[in-house]
Amino acid sequence: MNQYRTVGFYTLGCKLNFSETSTIGRQLMDAGFAKVDFDQNPDIFVINTCSVTDNADKKCRQLVRKAKKSNPEGFVIIIGCYAQLKPKEISEIEGVDMVLGANEKFNIVDHLEELEQEQTVVYNESIKEARDFVPAFSMGDRTRSFLKIQDGCDYFCTFCTIPLARGKSRNASIETTVMEAQKVAETDIREVVLTGVNIGDFGQGEDENFFELIKELDKVKGIDRFRISSIEPNLLDTDIIRFVLNESERFAPHFHIPLQSGSDKLLKKMRRKYLSELYADRVRIIKSTYPDTCIGVDVIVGFPGETDDDFMETLDFLKDLDVSYLHVFTYSERANTTAAKLGNAVPMNVRKERSRQLQILSTKKKRAFYESQIGKTGIVLFEHENNDGWMFGFTENYIKVKAPYDESLCNTFQKIELNHIDPEGFMTGELVKEPAIV
Image 1 (tube, rainbow, N blue to C red):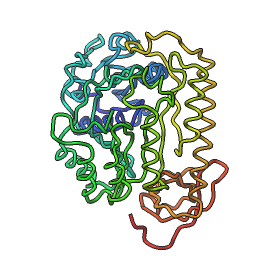
Image 2: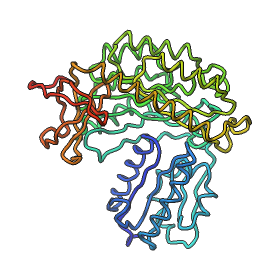
Image 3: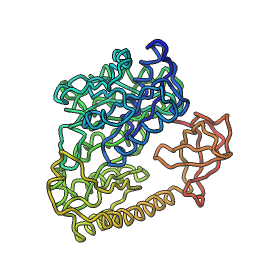
Image 4: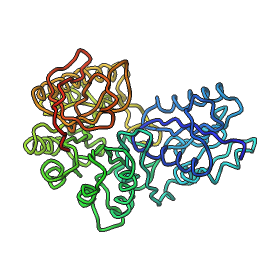
């Protein structure tokens, strides 16, 4: 394989995948490969896949075709959740040369020599054998990094394939995780997003927990801001809320909390570990502790058996909930999940209409949250990209701010007085001429 010295990556799915892609990329660079863009005709294409939606599966096939069209002599390696769940199906896609499951994706360097073979090589052990935790963090975006603190899930929600693709919940120790964060602190990255499959479940195998972890991460110097990517409501206890909002020096007042449904009947069918009352209580505690906190919500529409009344219960629940935005997922049947066997499928046109209604509600919620911030100041971390003369950044409470491009502001924290929402939905404001305090 010595003649094949360039590699390009394409990542589908979640922030966790991005952290792992970046780590695998560094492994290959350490082995002498040059990392190039996916569309720059690399010798090796690595596609890190997702399995959450059907669209992710279809996107994988499209990317294989794109890779082979751009470089017919290039090798295509598929990793990620789709590779773990359906290795045989992937191996039969024309153009795929190697499939690496959950246990093998971090050993990609060891397998490269086998790309000389004419047949597709598949390494895919049972997910029950996935016991090791491999730390990872993303680099390349000079503003922020996704730090993997946990992997796998023990919850087995009826709609989800992630436990089948990633195995049981596991993590490194707090000490090791802090050491990974310190590696990020040695770069020019200013913000770290904690990511995993079920990060609130941190502490498996040790007498440790997520609350103790964030207290230690808060002490890491060189990282100005931490953000929690997503945390289950039953794991988001008052100690975590009050630490993040009242006591920490570096954690952002921003929680993304999966709901999935406002109907207790459906929450039970989904096998979630809470009911709507607990969820509403978490939101009340957050908002009473710090009213300007941004709260994001995951919600699924069209789950099997979801009636019009069930959907309206979710819609009314969310209307009354003091949250800031929604991530709306249209339910799609996934093989080997309990939900796929429940029957009572909701027609796709009904699913799409319900999704449309929640998207409208999300737009209204986000607008109302932004309007509540007019006249206040936020600490904005500006990104590097020049978008037709404009630059963007996020406040600590996840307000997206737009400003005229100024290279000197890139990757800096600036205090901005928020005063306007532009027609595209971004906030604008005036730079406060004093040092930003983070």
